[in-house]
Length: 72
Image (cartoon, rainbow, N blue to C red; front, top):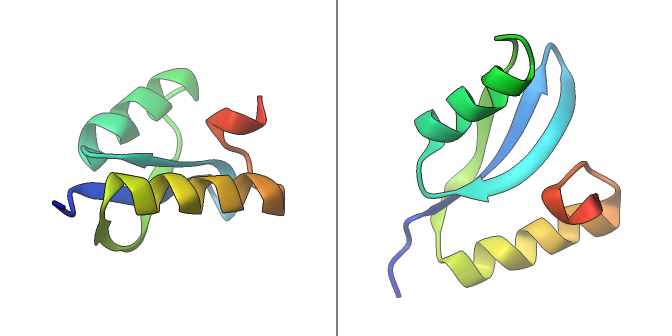
């Protein structure tokens, strides 16, 4: 299975405002900045992984209370 999915935190300053996964970090950062008045940056977490492994990680982040799309 191809390892083309990235795990990330979108941060404004030192605060994590979103945790997620994507196959395109640059595009995803632009999308987040569009919804946060041009502020923030993506911090990649680990190496590229499989989509299944990334989805599992995202679920763990939700359980830990980090803001994810699943948390809403």
